Length: 333
Image (cartoon, rainbow, N blue to C red; front, side):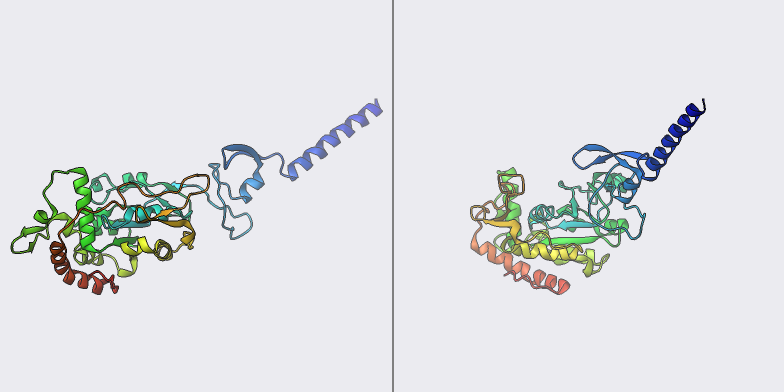
């Protein structure tokens, strides 16, 4: 009996010792965690905390903790945008957005939200639900070119955030107007000729500055409304012409403005001679390069050279005013 008692005590002691080892090595407290790729694995609780995985099971890479045991948050959430591409229509906003989306620290809405000009009554909570989910440190942005010319938009944007960064893609207003008209006739081919719409009186040469394709090109007029609410330092101007001739250079300056590392560089682009437009080289995992849609880089409607000269004369003082406001000469003739 004594031998059986001693044997039982030895067995119990062995179990206790094994349990203590198991506990102190952290093998008993586990969490079921979703790792990237959809794999679910059991992770000891200590590793779960120290690796920066949050309670939702979402994780991510990069970034060091400030101290031992400090948990990093890798939860992707929907946030209001920190940057907006506000204009201009037919200036190159779609190209800029597509190029910027190559950056891993940019999360951008692909479609135009039109919140500040059409859907403002729905409220900021609704606007937030439109945004893509983003990790801490990523820049959330959207582009709606109509914002630049809408009267109430600057004040509304400022009410959302006085620190939001604003990007405007501008282009020679004469070329922009023709591009705008070209898009219009592609959808409604039976509209009047460009010349009859551009002039109040064609015989006197009086320009109809209220016609939308021409009115949008009054950049100084529209920019002044934004400067009433935001300092120029929060507004970055992109040259639509240089976005075509030197996309990497323009993208580099935009990344600087957004406070991001210059990751999108010239290695990402090639020039498509057929479209006359830069395209993205084939991304990893794809067999084809990515060019913008067929509506980008299409031939413009032919316009009488005399009409073009009258438009250049009309825009000249407006362009000069714009150069003064921005401190940049875009060189439009």
